[in-house]
Amino acid sequence: MSAAFLPMQAAAGGGIGIVIDGKTVTVPLDDQAPLILDGRTYVPLRIIGEGLGAKVEWRSATRQVIITTFSSGSGAVPSRPPGRQNDVQIVIDGRVLAIPPDYGQPLVTRLGRTVVPLRAVGEALGCEVNWRKESRTVDVKSRLTFPVPSRGAEPSTPSSTLFQELAAYRTNLKLLDGSVISSAELLHKSEADFSTQQIEQFKTYLSQLSKYPSTVKLPDGTVIAMADLTIQGPAVATAGQLKAWLAAETPRIRAKMAQQYGREFVPIPDLAELYLRIGAEYGIRGDLAFCQAAKETHYWQFTGSVQPFQNNYCGLWATGSPCTGQEPLNGADPQLVRFEPGIHGAIFASPEAGVEAHIQHLYAYACRNPLPPGKVLVDPRYNLVARGSAPTWQKLNARWAVPGTTYGQSIIYDYWLKALTF
Image (cartoon, rainbow, N blue to C red):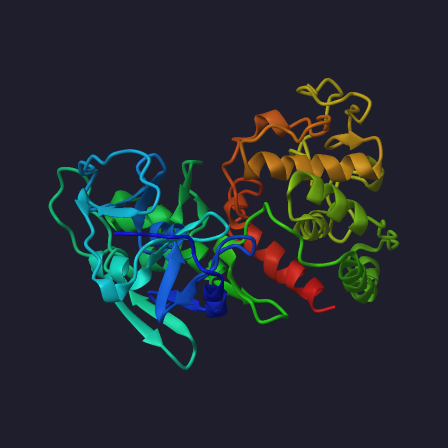
């Protein structure tokens, strides 16, 4: 089984859609997209893992793709001499996949990503794979969307429609006991595992989630699954678009402040360039962070407990109780952040410090890397975050905001997409 680097002409296969069990699957903008080469569709390993419900591991020493289905447990992986340079071996549940020559072979793209022929792997996993020429879409019907019995349990029927629909959103859910569960885990549970009250809450969550589509379409026609939109990555909206969007929203917000709050409109600070610049320094999507700030501050009108002078654009340390002034900085620079008695949340020395603290907080959620070289800690809650626990905006649900059932979706759909139209 040989696998050479992907030739340049394969790029012509761009714009391929992947639909798994009725749900559109897309990769992040900065990652390897699905492609067609010699009439065969190739997909990055992430689609196999997340889309087809299997665990995927890449072993670089032996150039093996190890795919384990949840129903099989972990099978023994056949040994292989290390250092094989020109071939990639696919192992599914402990067995080497023999791929027919006309199905294609694994390839390594120029981005250094391993892509595999979708039909070969999909069918090996028990899926039905069809090519829809009119829409340039590969339609996959998977058997792995059904739950796996608990260890020692008898085989069960597929999970309820409620759980299947919740699982499709790939979001976090806050349970009544205060814990957080990924909705995808519900595929491996039954309604008997939860109380009647919890089931009712799940129904409420589904009603809330159904208000948002699972995918969004950008002005250039690119379709993105909301669950796949990462916190890390390049900005899409420009500073000009962000400013034009706020300018268009200003009359509505001004009227709302007068009519609903009986308050003067607070001039919106000019932060678009700061968010884009500082976001890029951390590899964070500054345009979406800017939109999150708009959501958190109600377009910088600060209708909650945080006040405009604090330069606190994402509610850091605003816990519902006023500060005592003795809150720990947890390593943050005291020249850039402080607390005062009676004030809700941290106070930052400047707008730039406030933006950087916000970006650092997102960085803590998105990855486990140390701060970029030369950066000083500004966020006093940076070291309190479960590092890398929310690599996507939707993963902020039930973490950044509680219960926050649609928190990430709202940032994307209610704010960011609107800015992109300008």
